[in-house]
Length: 456
Ligand SMILES: Cc1cc2nc3c(=O)[nH]c(=O)nc-3n(C[C@H](O)[C@H](O)[C@H](O)COP(=O)(O)OP(=O)(O)OC[C@H]3O[C@@H](n4cnc5c(N)ncnc54)[C@H](O)[C@@H]3O)c2cc1C
Image (tube, rainbow, N blue to C red; front, top):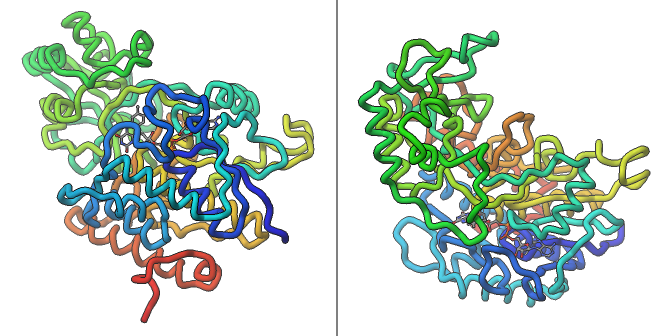
């Protein structure tokens, strides 16, 4: 099969990783980045490729942290963006923190030197013609392209979501202070874990929420609070009982003054979401206030609550586990007619939240796309690795799908694994599975793996 031209939309973290991986596999890549021309987003400030919109940290490096593990995997798989970040690194203890200008300059250099990437400084408005396309247009995807994706994926399948509630690691919850029950005991299985507060604790909780500092609003967030999902601190400011009639209402849950409900985030119930607790409080403040709840006094947060404009696909319905748009959207009678365009998605638009996650999904979608276009057998990363786990978590059936960071709670594990063996087991499992995969003939001919993986 002759190597063809491919298109990557978005010169952010995921799009640049994907473009570099595709060029490395021999493809000619048209990389569209609208900020190189007249395009703007509400959060980006420069026209640089791979601009970091907020913090300059890719989080932890130690393999005892989830993000450290994810980075080890990316290093083993020859991620270009990780190499650029390491080159632009500044001293920051155990985390990979970069000089953001140097980092973007490193990425621009890699793109320019690849020799196969044609950087186009325009907004791309088409993703579903006959050119194989990888969409990595991020959470602030241009309006026109967003509308087009909505139309072509059948209408309601792209969310605009501005609120995210915190997620808690289940083994940090004090179950002696919580109870399993659905409101009014409806349903055959109890899906909610309820965390009650007495009157005194509730008053203190509301007082702290009212006085707490919020993260500064971005201009585009102003006046964009939907009444249907107000931040909890905003509800607390509206009245002492507002929360007790809202997300903390005890009705149908026995005799309690107020109750916070937790709902499992994943099938293994290793993570719980605080239902209705969208917040824009500073992360340290969230930890301090939410730990007032007796069941959450030692809570570890896999993700803090956040609010920002966020465009993401309902990936469980739209993408398969290679990050390709599902075949159900193609074929006779579909909007695509009898064509089956090859369309992949990567980065935050898939619901994989965070800088390192954007790089990881960019690598993954490009790998699978290249294999398909080269007519090689599909060769997904193995179950148990961090990247595969992240992708499975955004593509598995999930009625309450929301963006997620990679964290230890997502990794598959045996049921009876002891708490103190958890990290070691998961760390070894991820490394062993990936090493086996890299060294098998179907992978090793193509992956630019780190020298440490290749046996002497
Ligand atoms: C305000 C905000 C703050 C965030 N802060 C953090 C943080 O501190 N830490 C963290 O880990 N994560 C953060 N995130 C989440 C996420 O990790 C980042 O958004 C990350 O940059 C996502 O990478 P990406 O490649 O998917 O998208 P982006 O890095 O946003 O790249 C997408 C690119 O596509 C371009 N584009 C969009 N539409 C088109 C089009 N039609 N044609 C051509 N180009 C187009 C955009 O200009 C952009 O450069 C934040 C997100 C937001 C919105």
